[in-house]
Image 1 (tube, rainbow, N blue to C red):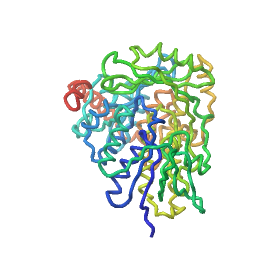
Image 2: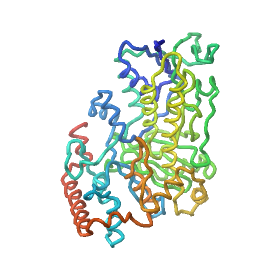
Image 3: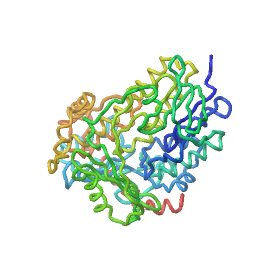
Image 4: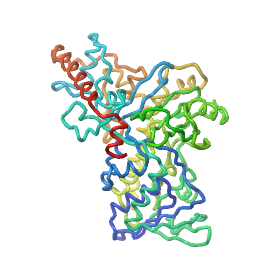
Length: 496
């Protein structure tokens, strides 16, 4: 065996420093040296970042105190995403985290709810989501501290300042022996077998390594420029290719959710942090100029700006090989699937998790590389399909952008999922998905896609029992949420 003795991370920011923190934690102090190269000249993109629930598990596995992390990153809690004007202009729906309802007897809750709707019950699906009810009422309490209660099946994530989070992970990695080198990489040198041998900095210094992690953003300095791995372009599926972002002052209560509001040529995000709000407009350059996007953003932010808006172009898709030879691409260097469902940091962590699972020797066995790429591409495609659904199912035709969204070609994987759901509310079985049944059900319902019928197996249970169970569950969630602290109160008392 020829174990790795040194890993070189090229690039900082959220992707580089999260990679450094995870590797330094999991590899221990003596197994492998890690050096991170970054240039203060280049900087990073960091305005505000919304995360998904696995992020909470990540910081717990790293041994990070959640309250300390929240204080250091200006974070707030997130129970889901509110979508305004996506299906129709006047329509609003919520994508909650955690469970929706509990099984009734041996029967799936959603099927029981479908039967109740067929019998005339007018309860909303989200009445049975603890996260939705908490969000609607501006309340928050950790479900882990309320197990075996009506909100015990809830889940949550965080809104964080991406720059502060990168700094936090940097301090974490530094304290565990990581070596940081300031410098700008200008050349990548390879061995006879094609593997990367070293990188050369602008001042002539050379940094050698056994394995390299590319965190250089969309430039893909190592994976793209040096190794020639092309990108798979998903522009035909995902219409937006630019964003303009700005920090603003607070203009009201700290909502425990992200808001995504549809606009003429895209959508606006609103991410509340403790001391400010991150806001931005994601749009398609085919239908909207940068000047028009800036005007739309400033007209809708609702509070004074704290800095100048920044325009950020992006391309959706992923590298055809996220790992090639002795180089792994992470973050924007590996791919990007627009910010709608806040999966950027999740895919960084996911990529490192799988890398640690298939941790190589210096020879980088091709079987490990193939399986890593297969598994990560599956994750990218899952996220892609979920986001396409938000656009393609719209009924809006009030602008050329939304008319074009109705013509988006659906990948076969998404088309099959929709057809299966429409039959009787069934879900595709996927190993370790990010978006579970409750997420798909919420977006399907919000975008007007509904099953034609329920599974007749539910007819084995007396309807009076279903009716009583729904009434009790709805009342219990509402009753408990009424007595929970507000989001601001909980933040102040536990992480303020």
